[in-house]
Length: 531
Picture 1 (tube, rainbow, N blue to C red):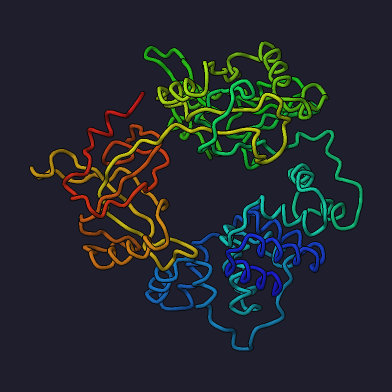
Picture 2: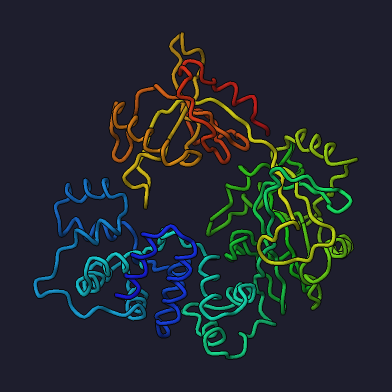
């Protein structure tokens, strides 16, 4: 555990991607099994200990330190695990022999809600503050050390000089602590057996188009749909539905699991159908409708009826035992078009190509598309093979320009991790009528991105100097600052006082110059709502 704690500490204090890769690769090479496998799983959020939650840690600390001291410290530090690790009383007999990572995982894995209050303290008493922090982060997940799943896999590939695409291919077929993966990568054993498993294959991704202009003779255009990218896999009589990160979401969308009955690996966008007045089902509904089903452990019959899922297909990776990823896009597209009639049209259709005279004409088509289910366009090189990750020049995403609205800063909250000392999460609102006639501000969104580090320091200072009220970690501020907020769409919402919810709000500009009474009104947003 000491080595793992040292790794976390080093990762926290470096921003360099290459240095993070070096640190993880060195740890993987020097640490024995199964510790390195458990550590790799922890870094990629691959562990889940149901008995250990943030509330468990809070309750343990409130039994050992003054509750007011705990609350004030947690609010200042901004991280439960870090606060608990520092405040935990040192045992009278001194710190005991620290557990290994695998010992800690074994102990955490058998804890129950009834036993965790006695068993977790025994582990914490065997560790110093750095070890306690590492243990609590491992137990609760969410490391927040700037390591994505992709970066960890690249580090594995660099550690053992193996192709990262192969690491991606085998990763999702294995369970922590990844003994077969390390046997292959580190010891030269045969690759893990995956042929008869409903295995996730890494997605091919796109670069933003930005200033690039492409020749439509070389590229095909299709709509970029606003759902969630999924992969549907049917192998050896078993079907799985995977998200873009490789998470198995089959239980959340059971209707899709029963819809694919032939051996295939399909790439597409998961959407839900809109329901017209009278109960007739139509085309793709907005992301807001899909969001009602995301993350649910149980799906009611009413939800299946009111928001039925379907997949709008983009590509076919494998079909009836043949790997098609080595074929150019135009040939895969032909195979896909022939495949779609064999699939139930209640659960599948195909993403239509967009025809245009030239690139300028395509831009006009893109700007004219304000269907809530459309994010923009995809441009795919006609001769591109299906390769994992983002490869320059093959696929581009050309999102439509965001919508913009001027909002007033209303509330601020401290961030987490590196931002735990700054008020970096901002809630903003629009006027419910004419501000000169006493209209009030209603919250319409929250954002924590879109500004520089220098701007963050200036905003943090403003929040502290203009605080009106405190509500736990949240501060209400004077209405003095306008944000120009960018967002993709806006939807009706019963959960918010304004009756509206923004999709992907982010701060586009800070309008230090603009008087707050000139900010936009609620009706400007309501005009953008689509059914």
